Length: 130
Image (cartoon, rainbow, N blue to C red):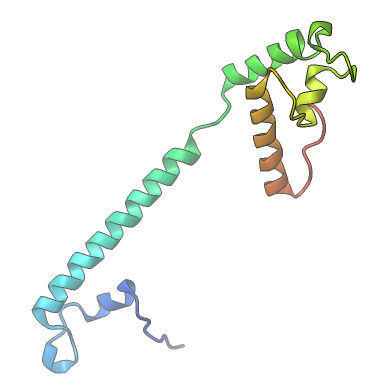
């Protein structure tokens, strides 16, 4: 099994320290390649740290879940929050992405994020309800 060298930083490492007379880079070229290799590794490590920081923090913690439950129990199905013309509850309007919502924009945005995530990861719609 053979490997064909590519024009990449990782394959350039093979030539570090090789004598210039034997097809290598020489000392200056080797030093420059080591510098670029260290820079490459540092940038990739920084990228991993940034992505890890973004992904590892849960968007919804126990307090926010309890807040959504309380909203659903106390506000979303309240008769006072029902739209008079269509007779739809606030929960129904949030779950159908009603553009005319005058309150509960935070819940609507969270619901849209959850719907988008579930559709992206499973390919299926999330269904109705929180």
